[in-house]
Length: 92
Image (tube, rainbow, N blue to C red):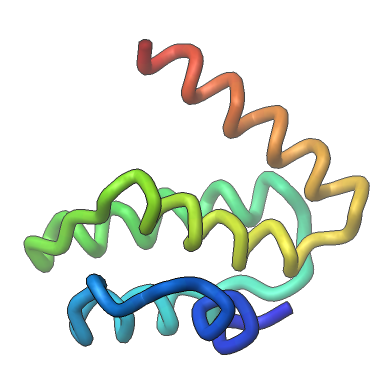
């Protein structure tokens, strides 16, 4: 699954064109690979966004994760989802 499939299926009317461009560029950074690579890509993109003054809502982050997870094999997607859940629990 690619950016266009996910983001065209979602209501993106409230997302600025700058954010959509950033999300699309980020979704192209990682295709295939494994959960560890995906998490590294996500961290890199997050740091880049912060440097550019771009922040994302929880729903925007969820869309970003959906794109990245769809690019992984089912096994690696399961691993990544586990890591994401662990990170979310640690934030609380």
